[in-house]
Amino acid sequence: MDTLALLLDGFTTALTPVNLMWAAIGVLLGTAIGVLPGIGPAMAVALLLPVTYALEPTGAFIMFAGIYFGGMFGGSTTSILLNTPGESFSVVAAIEGNPMARKGRGAQALATAAIGHFIGAFAGISLLTLLAPTVASLAVNIGAPDYLALMVLAFIAVTSVLGKSRLRGFASLMIGLTIGLIGLDEMTGQQRLTFGLLHLADGVDVVVVAVGLFAIGESLWVAAHLRRNGNRAIPVGRPWLGKQDVQRSWKAWLRGPAIGFPFGAIPAGGAEIPTFLSYVLERRLSKHRGEFGKGAIEGVAGPEAAASASAAGTMVSMLTLGLPTTAVAAVMLAAFQQYGIQPGPLLFEREAELVWALIASMFIGSVLLLVLNLPLAPVWAKLLQIPRPYLYAGILFFASVGAYAVGGSSIDLLLLFIIGLIGFAMRRYGLPVLPAIIAVILGPTAEQQMRRALQISDGDITGLVNTPFAGCIYAVVVVILLWPVIARVLRGRRPAGDAEVKTGD
Image 1 (cartoon, rainbow, N blue to C red):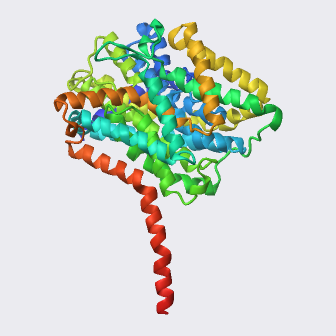
Image 2: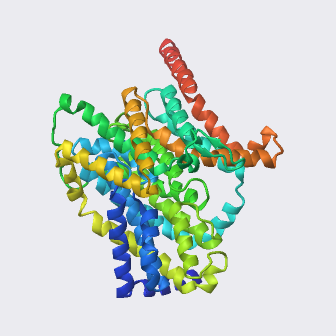
Image 3: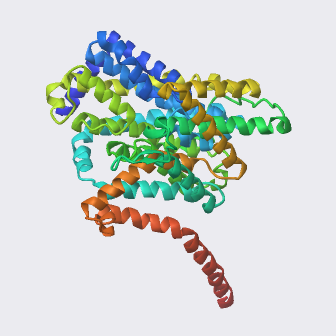
């Protein structure tokens, strides 16, 4: 009852006209900035930090929360319509959302994403309100072997379900891991694959890699085939979800938060892993498995709900432990410190009004996100009617601006187009792009966790699997790897059983 009373007090604060205005501004800014390739909510919050010096803390954090959730939906918009992720967590939205858009179902894909974000955010914030102390205590007990096992599961899952060839999936994974190695070894300080360039000592930013492989690679691929395929306009289609769309999506909308929230609350890669795992799960459970890769609506509904629930989950460890698990959470932690506030176990006691107003504003922001963006789905979908030469020229421009904004260096632009050529070559030879992105995002962290686990175990290889949690995850990995063999054996036995039945008759 204390929690409910505190939450009601938070709503009283958040629903004042001024704070409601900051929430609406945050959602609109987050969505608009999230639409630009390479400029996501983390950069938006960072850019707005100096602007908020004059604001009182409650209003500032209410606006930051709106930017966070709005940015997540904005990143999904360009993924679905233009196959150009605005953030690393919106990569999965492109897999099924972009084929839907190409079939004239862009508005349906955007509406599915908007509803998924609303359900995921609402469920995640509810769990944040009720379970924050419990989830935080569980997160403290997860060690390096467990983190490594989760990341290995993400690697294997994404390479096993995408594309027609597992070999090509693993080749794509190796490309990404190689790019992820560029920079300084954090433990020894030695340079790896930098070719003597100081600019590469910090590695290649994941935004540059994601925008290069998707936006530049896709633009070059379209340009290479534009003369052959012509400049056909893509129809927008009807603006709302049909009955069949809702029937196929509602279970995925409910399953997504169950995956997203726990992963968001632990330092296991933010929203990337749960969106990938949600996609894998929906592909396994769907009755329309043949549509996956060609525009299956379940592949948009589940991952988008998981992403938004994960965003709520990241607030658990940030508020209760002072432990940021995503770039946005890290920037928000800096914002707290800017106001002389230290997140941690005592935050709920010392700054109760601020914390509960922030949580209440997340509920309000998720409603505003749905109300503002659901009617705009057909408007966003009309982007597809722009002539393709102009459309992809615009993508190249904004992708270049986004990449340059990351580090403010012309070398980032050169890297962007080199990686874009790699993305073009991957499309030419049938290599799926997503495993490479996963490897770049999670590869360096997986390496750190592996080396940390081996240090703890004094170099003993069993230190990688010496926890029950890690053992269970690796058992799932083995099943995924051996599943084609198991399925072949099961298919081989079935006809024999049928023949025996016929003989008995």
